[in-house]
Length: 101
Image (cartoon, rainbow, N blue to C red; front, side, top):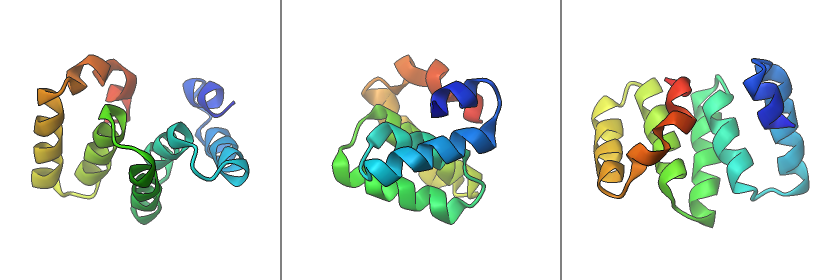
């Protein structure tokens, strides 16, 4: 339901739904990634990404981390991450996450 509300632009409802998912399944990777991109508090966003990193590392996770770092003003770190991901194919998934910029 979080993704449904997110696509409708109902961000508060999406955040609530992702948090409900995490209450039932604390290591739900996709909920952690999506929630990290939606919350206003960047410290919370980083904590969600840190939890997701413990589960696995993949292109979506690194792309999300790059977006969050750029929001934090850490442009050099974000740039390095995104360049590294470009080498392993992050551009293929850009349409999925590009609207977060």
